[in-house]
Every structure is written in structure tokens, then in C-alpha cells.
Length: 178
Length: 186
Image (cartoon, rainbow over all chains, first blue to last red; front, top):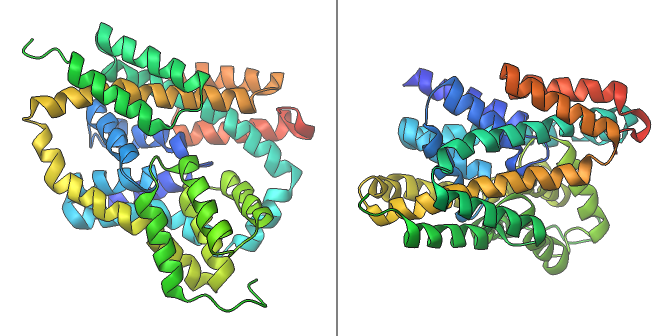
């Protein structure tokens, strides 16, 4: 149990530390650590957790950390994983904030971040593709994916509405009894 | 810092961030307008300019957008303790809600066909959101040729070798140091 807690803390600390720019930046790393690395969840469960994290209030990665931590080690697991994912932010902003402010203004930091963001886009695309293999499994899910992708690219739609449409389509079009 | 103003009570800081944490959906950028309304518009803790400065730092450092913004605002109004209180406030509602879902709601999923149907539709929706995020980021960030080439090369390497995300990010950053100088990648 103690090992699980320590591993959870360390894993989510890494996820917090390498989620640069927030949002879905954590997905490739979470996927690598949680599905491929530790085998803690199946791909479908992982997508479910992102969906739950997205439709509940609060930061998505905090939500995901709490949920995954709970599934693996109960309440102490949930608290450990959450603490792990917020530790880098706390340390960097409380202890190193002055240094950080200066560093970010350096031109080299800008170049580094530009290169890093190119890598991040590649990583998120690959993650989306592999997650898609578990999510997009028949004609109905292909259509849900394509229509919502187009909607989200063409207009600035609140993600909650898109997820609501997905859930509704699921309820109506699920292959019941097949 | 907050000179010239009355010192804000830590309770007010806590309650404000609890409220932001409990009522903002979607995380990240979706939370920012509500943050802005609370701390810039309503409480006048920071002005617009400071808020956008915070945002620049938030986007260039590790961590969640909402969390990093909350900590910076907390530090600005009440020092390090304020930062901790803000972090606790913005996180605590998520933890409580997710614990309730993980303990009571998710176990129902396995046997309920309607919950399964909902997730059957939610999964492609989540993948669509993630794909759209990557494509939008690409459109915003990869306007220079170097950036596009770097992204394409890394994409190939990641697909072929299954390179760990941390290594891919570091490789991208280091390449950026050499090829993105002088705004070459944006």
C-alpha cells in the first residue's frame, strides 16, 4: 500500500511538472504513465475519466488525479495523487517565482518553449489517435467524432455542449441488445 | 504588492477560490473568464494588466492554468500563505466532487446499460475535443516553417519509436533553442 502511494505521488508529480501550458497538455504523459507504464487503467477507462473530469467543475488534471488515485488506493490515493499533481506549481510559484519571472523573459526561454510546443502538438495528436482506437469503434462513433470535431474547429463552442451532444447521441444511438 | 489597500482576509481568499473551483467547468482556459470576473471585476485584487501578465507566466510554466493563476493571485494579495490558500480553495471542490463520483457513481456504470450508452457517445466526443485542441494549438503556434517541420519530424519519431512524452518535450525544447531563435518558429 505504501509503495502504491509513493508511486502515485511520484507519477502525478511528473505529470504536474511536464504539463506545460495546462489543459490537454497532460494527456500524452498521463496516457504514457498510467496506461502504458503502470497499466493502472484500460484506454477506455482513461477516456471515461477524462470525460468525467471534463464535465465536473475544477481543473481537469486535478479531477483526473483524484479519480485515478481513488480507483487505485481509496481516499488516501486520491489525496496523494492530487497533491502530487499540484506540488510543482506550488514549489515553482512560491519558492522560485522571482527566478521564473526573469527566466521567462529570456529570449532563449522563448525559443525553448516554441520547440517544446511543437513537440506538444505532435504528442497530443498521437495521443488522440491512440485514444481514438478505443473510442471510435463503429459508424456511429465515427460520425459523432467527425461532427463534433468539425463543430469545435469551426466555432468557439463550450466543450460542455459538445460533450452533452455526445452523451445524448450515445443514449439515442447505442447498439442496445446487440 | 497590495499596499494602499486593506489587507484581504484569508477567509475571503479561500471562499472566492472555493467558489471558482466549484462553479467552473471544463478546466483550463474555460475557467479564466470566471476567474477574471471574480478577481479583477468584483474583488479588484489585480488589474487587467497584471492578470494578463500572470497568464503569460502560467502558459510558460508547468502546471494547470487555473491552479497557476490562482496561486499567483493568492501570493499577490496575501503572500505565500495566500498562495497556499488559493491553491487549496481552487482544488478542494474538485477533490470532494470527484471522490463522490468515484465512490458512488462510477461503480453503477458497470451494470447500467444507459450509463454505458452515455459513455459510448462521450468517448468519441472527448477524442474530438482533444484532436481539436491539438489542431487549434497547431494553427496558433506553428505559423513558421521551422515549427511545422519540427512538429512533423517529432510526430514521425513518436509514432515510430514510441518516444516517452517527457523525452519528446525535452527534444522539442532543445531543438527549439537552436532552430527557433529570433522568432524563427512563430
